[in-house]
Amino acid sequence: MQNITNELDEDLFKSIKSQLINSRNETYAEFRKKLKPKFYKVWLDIFFGWLSLLAVLFSAALIFSKFHNWGISLATAITAAIACGYLVAYLINFFHEAAHFNIAANKNTNDVLANTFIGILIGQNIKTYRLIHWEHHKNLGMPGDTEISYLEELSPGFIIQSVTGIRVLKVLSGRKRFIKKSAAEMQNESRKHFFASVIFHLVIIAGFVLLKQWWLIAVWVVGIGAFYPFFNSLRQLLEHRGDWANKNTDYTKEPHGKLTRIFGNSFFERSFGSAGFNKHLLHHLEPQISYTRLKDLENFLRDTQIGSLLRSQATSYTKTFIKLFQSK
Image 1 (cartoon, rainbow, N blue to C red):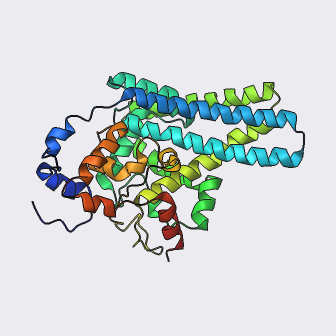
Image 2 (tube, rainbow, N blue to C red):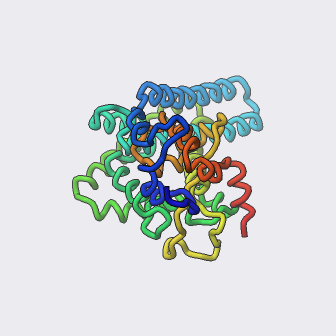
Image 3 (cartoon, rainbow, N blue to C red):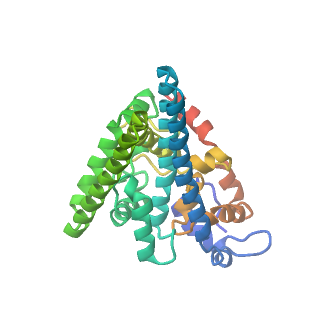
């Protein structure tokens, strides 16, 4: 096997995976055939996300109804908005899984379910997102990447832009330019799903109005409009921004370089990095493997010639946040 001194990435893995073998003398090719998706787990995880979102709204409504104190209501609203934003970010990660046809065995069913239960939250069509996302795999670390949060410095300014929606406008502007290059049919599908999402959110807000839950309107709007974009952008930045990145370099014009991290298995890391994003390095090595099998893939690779290399790229979201936030 070739001498491995580089950081593990897609190119290196592609060149060596045929030579990988674990301590039980099992080749990677043999092991790879076993990694079939566990669709029941996918839908249990999605159900947990929706149930948790409803539980947050219901609990907040109870507090608003019982306590008519402005201070308690404001504190509850902020807490609930943060929780809603976090849970929407949790759910949206499964849209990424659907982009790789991994939430249902049938591809058409996969797309219908993705649009109905996930895309409706953010007005995205899975077919359009799939095209956009594949550009991320093709152009990771390059100016042509379509997922760009990591190209910016982790700073108070990044956090403010994320929470206030400024970063959302940047991302949508870039994706709009990409969609314009696609077929007219794709553009029509994108518009249709966007308006379906607008109606979905208006119905929810109308429900809060009928129930006279005025604070819940603020919780929903701020959670979806501010905290979801923040958590989504932050996750992506922590996955791909290099320790070497220079805050004075415009990485939309200059190559940033490839970097993908692998994170831990705590409840926070599995929820913040839901749908396998906490094992994001492994996803970039094998994009078509279901997140339900990434832990199995990690265990196998740790028991091969690249085990030490994989361990060297393992970290935590907290450590990465502190390191990047403090970097100059």
